[in-house]
Amino acid sequence: MSAPPVTGLDRRLFLTSLLGASAAVAGLGGCAGGSAAADTEGALTRPLAAEVPAGTSLKISSYQNVQQLQFKLAKLPALPFEVSDWLNIGAGPDVINAFRAKSLDLANNAGIPPIQAHYQGFDARIVAIDVTRKPNYLFATKPGSDIRTVGDFRGRRLAFSQGQAQGVVLLRALKKAGLRYDHVTLVPLTSNQFLTALQSGQVDVAPLGNSQAPAYLKQYGGKGARVIRTDVVDLLNLLWAPRSVLADPAKAAAVAAYIPQWAKGQVWSYEHPRVWEEEFYVKTQNLTPDQAMSITALANKPLFPPSWGEAIRWEQETADLLAEGGFVKGFDVSSLFDHRFEAIAARAVPAEYRR
Image 1 (cartoon, helix red, strand yellow):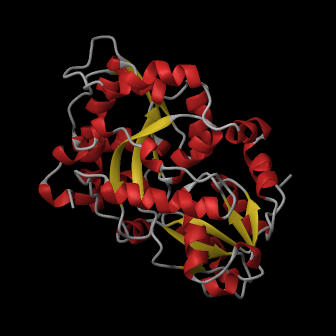
Image 2 (image 1 turned 30 degrees about the vertical axis):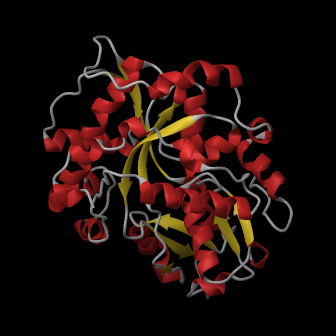
């Protein structure tokens, strides 16, 4: 059964229906575990260990095995710790649940999941930033739709995931078009439900990743589905980890050792688009070479800033936008960043990938 649409004053109901009552209650109570926070906060200010202690392991997310493939193709050196599990999860809500269950130590997401985790009362910190300058998402319409611009979203049903990048892209697009929340109906879904919702007509519009659009249009373009591109960007591609992980000196050192590999892997795939198209999009995603090439043509050049000032400002704007809509409570996002890791990614890549 699909979740109810969000209109007017139904924000609290929306949060409950999408994330579950326990998450909503946790969010209302603020950050949980006050005594544990006091115990570990000091550990987050200690310098990182220069070497990873023997026997250290991490559980790392790698959605669709992207990281392992990048590391393999780029022939990067072996990590100085054991990866006890590579988890094929990418959606923000799934990552937060895995963090809570202690089945995941480090994840790659956009900027909105750390905000959502904070609202739910779970403390996690950002440890690496990759800035994106070009849109990673576009808006797809259901088959037979007459929608052609974001302005046409007025009065329509829009797929909305509060805890994922697609959600903030939608909110920013609405704001830029001068549309208020009560001008549309937000239908709470997670991103893995968007395609089904479009195909069935449950929603009129859903944000899709650039990599999803070719296959969707191939199947439904002849039936009147279309895509709407905007210049709205989801600025942050980041690594983040639970505070409990970062308060462990051995695991924190392993995270610090992983960040350079993560950055170098992204640079490699950007610099070798033809190989990446074949090895990832064609062989693992079953796209045609032309479809794969259309995706890499839109790829962002990786940028790992040595200073996180721009990232913090953008994250604050995002949190404020969510608070404005009643989706979270306002807060100072500076608490989400662990500055011990700030320059690690930048030092690992050539200067052209730092700004």
